Length: 373
Image (cartoon, rainbow, N blue to C red; front, side, top):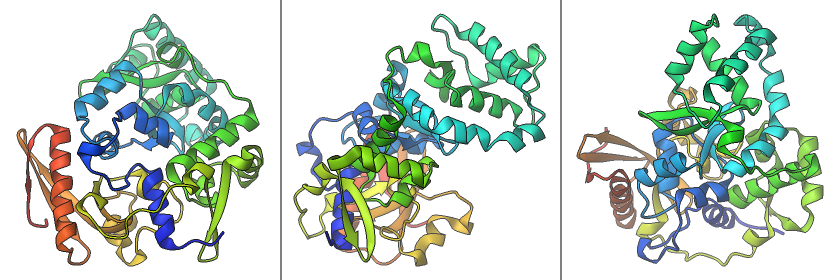
């Protein structure tokens, strides 16, 4: 079925939870519901990840996000791509079942360079299991001290790779908040009732859930997002069956859930609520291999200066990225500095101001909109 770029953007905004709405009229939603819908929300940058939930759940605060982490209704780990994500607790196990083997195999050379051997991983596993069994938790620094005290060197990224390996293989995950970050816990204690899926069922679930929160998207987008294989994606398509459908935009096939395909058209006009201040590293941009539909390649170097993988927070207007924004925070106030690519309309300017107020309310501080920095 043919579709336009405008259709693609409209549906992506709906799938991503960024569709225009009035805060007062929005259906109640919380941090866990956002993560449940998107399946995985990039969370390498902790503060940005918290706002990624906040911008999609009008009215919640950063305290609500940390409360969800403390309660275990949102969990943080490395389900794919070697990148931290927020994920639904019950889903992490089967996601790791799909991705772990490829992720660990890809680190063989790096482990050799760090002189990490099977005995090191085994000893580290035994020590942390003994330390955490019974519902206990431990901070990263304290875990490094534990390993060092027992003869396991953690310098030169060894400590990071030990934690990553034990999380990737299903022993650990990040649990309750600890100082400014999180503490580590045993996954099987923190998530006592995980979902169990057969291999092909898990592949299909991965694809359907990805498209429910990110569609329309290409199969290449999905393979990139999971760091999976084209063969696995084809199996997922076959198992998903009628739950998925496709549209053609400018000669490219995009897949989406049948439910998303039936969503009504949005108003054509731009409103203040159709403008969003989206955080750095957000799924709206990083959830796809090809970002051209939402970001003009001419502006890519502004969003990712130097192409170094560090993404700026972006301004989204009716699905397109129209600029970036920066912030100057203090204990009582945050000043938002919009930097549009081109001059904004008055309605878009109003939308930026509204977005800044929403962001400040999320942080629990006052707000000002300042000049570009």
